[in-house]
Length: 269
Image 1 (cartoon, rainbow, N blue to C red):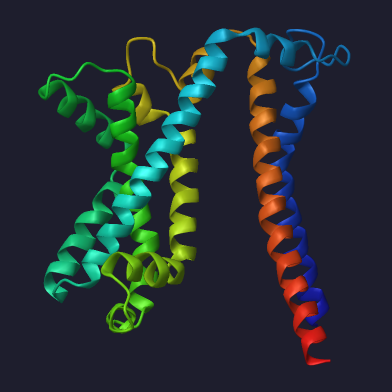
Image 2: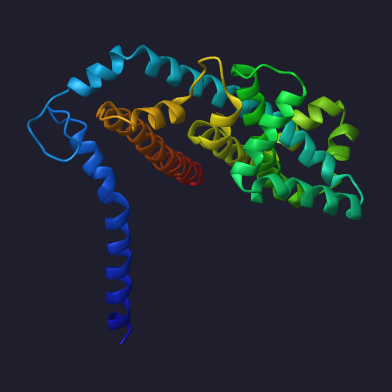
């Protein structure tokens, strides 16, 4: 009976995985197609990867996406972590109000955030370009970091920092050597989500950038207006990088855990 129930579940999951990953497989295959056709296979070639390397606007867009993603992630992690720690010291009413306010940018439709940021920068008289793009990414990444870090801060013993300072640590040492290591998983998750959101963002970036500054999302959007299989090549490279990151993130912790278990067993022997 149990076996008969498992079969439809496995079939459903298999169909879902097939539906999700088949387009990615097709995209990767056609990135090696020796023609401009996006649907008819005419031979194996690396020509679109070579075309991608020769495309200076694409290389510039990759640099913009990486630099904005790294800087926005770093700044939002610092701001978000400090805010999460500060929130835990506030009164319950104030903390609840601030957390609800923090959730608004996350739940707000992205197009509304994009238009509001565009108007805000215009109101301040800021010329749209790299700076406005970076500030906008910091603005929508920071609430994500707070949402990921605050639950970890809440799990901490409130007397932990005081105990560290009683033992001779300065407030900064207590923060760096005691608090931060305890909330490290939340910080790592927030940083990863922030970088992914920044690297992937199109709508907000499209509204707040200017003066020829484009990230990968905007360049790909412009490339889809005409037949250009270089889009397939770029998307395949991003896919391979993400796959490698996922594999490393899965295998390395398993190897570390296995090594620790071996060391523990040797010490017990």
